[in-house]
Length: 223
Image (tube, rainbow, N blue to C red; front, side, top):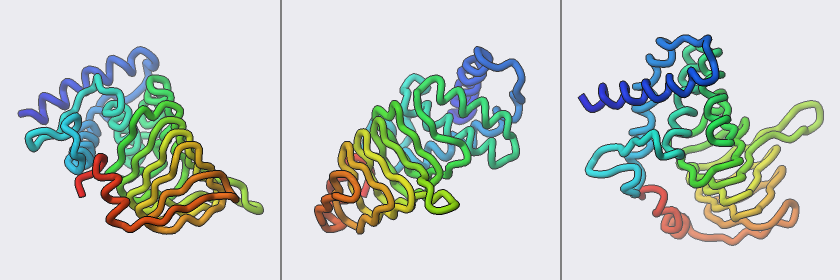
């Protein structure tokens, strides 16, 4: 019953928002992907220690909590794209961009365990993302031209990107990496288990153990 009620509430709010911008979209196609998107949200939030997202064995899903709503809109647009509803994916993606000043394109495959805090101005472009990604405001991930093609980054598992940090081009970020605020990495190689500061090519890498990084990120995820 709770799933049915949550779907109905979510659908009502979402369609009202979409109607404010676009008259021509398939309402049924969007409605059909709401429960799968909520299921992905539940799997994500179940790994979080904060009672803002998971409480008493249940997901806390509030359309009035902007981070929850923007992640939901990304999930929904991604599912719509995967199911061949390109126009509907476009309108949901564009709604997310208008409402939240973010650019998380629906063809970008963000991990199941993904969270953001104050993510205004964040751009998550084409890259290979691994599980347990956490970002803050102004973060950028994207390509850089290399010869006659564009190279994109690879991010390992349990990566945190603090405010205004950037990862571009043929960069490889290891597992258990904290990217400090204002760090700029282009075509860089960052090893596992570290904190990275500075700007390429003059990066400072502070090595840690996997347990130390996991302890530092235990406020984000249940390890």
